[in-house]
Amino acid sequence: MTSIQSIKAIQVLDSRGLPTVSCNIALDSGANAMAMVPSGASTGTKEALELRDGDSLYMGKGVEKAVDNINNIICPVLIGLDPRNQKLIDQKLIELDGTDDKSNLGANALLAVSLAVSHAAAKDKNIPLHSHFSDIYRDITGDVTSPNLPMPMLNILNGGEHADNNIDIQEFMIIPKGASTFKEAMRWSSEIYWNLKSILKDNNLSTSVGDEGGFAPNLQSNEEAIQLILQSIEVSNLEPGKDVFLALDCAASEFFDGTNYNLLGEGRSLDSDSFASYLESLVDKYPIISIEDGMDEHDYDGWKTLTNKIGSKCQLVGDDLFVTNKKIFKEGIDNGLANSILIKFNQIGSITETIETIHLANLNNYKSIISHRSGETEDTTIADLAVGLGAGQIKTGAPCRSDRVAKYNRLLWIEEEFSSLSLFNE
Ligand code: PGA
Ligand code: ZN
Image 1 (tube, helix red, strand yellow):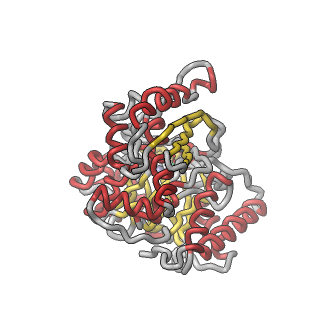
Image 2 (cartoon, protein in one colour):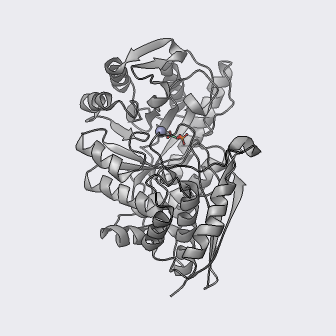
């Protein structure tokens, strides 16, 4: 049996220039691997706790405590364990922390170790990480996966918490559904992105970008953003609604005040029913096939209304609503909220729990979308997770900025090397 020989964590920087946790694990077989954790900005209130130092360094955003927790508390307990047994390792991590929200050692500490273990084990088995994730899914759930290349959802226009512009909806995404390969999906997306840039320039609008690499101009309305994107698709000689579809992440919790949804950029304030009707009107008017966090994470009645209104014709994705948490997700399923779940492993803090949540989605016919965070690194684990679990969809930002394209580039290589995998398109 191979065993963990050493674990070492340090503080590194993420795509926003803020500290995050990086962890390296060495095995007695000689294999070693490193991973880094991402970090959100428009976070759900029920996410596992990201431990920050809160002192005078890095505006309080340092993660030295989380790093120390790995080096001094987690490391001694995991030395000698079998890295192939992800479930056991994650169980140890969860027990060591001992809280529901990982607030003792920090979800960022736990996840860094959980990720690095999976990478080290894949190297030790001499198989690609995505194949190892298929194995872990089987070990944990007893079910098998159907690996594929995920359909990308590319956020090419940023608003909300991810940009300094006046757009209230956080993400305007393209889904190149008509593409027959991942490679083609990326070419189309890059061309649309560049054509959008030209259109913005021609209209004297800003071409600076937001946290996820999408453009962040000031516009009159959310609909103007949609129309500019539709133009950029057409200029790329592609047909909206046939080759390329649209998706939104409203991140609605960011502009809900407990009663109303405040679209400050448009100077409008809508109650829950009216906001659901507004989203329905967008879906009826434009080729929008997916809406994430259309309602506030606590507005369950609003979620029910929205799901009843458009759940049969539109993917409705719970991000802040479900926070990748099996228990919270189960309640949502039982109450008929949404029909899909966004998967962010740092919302819950371990690979095992992430996989359990995806399994629950599979059992209940909810779609899973594997997702980056707005604060990212060059770590590409989510690309392999999407492939190995056959999730079918990934959202990891614009086709621009290395923290975003690192994931897409990893998928391009997987497609090249594994010709049996095809682009998911359902
Ligand atoms: P976050 O944004 O990483 O800032 O939470 C991404 C999202 O809301 O999907
Ligand atoms: Zn979201």
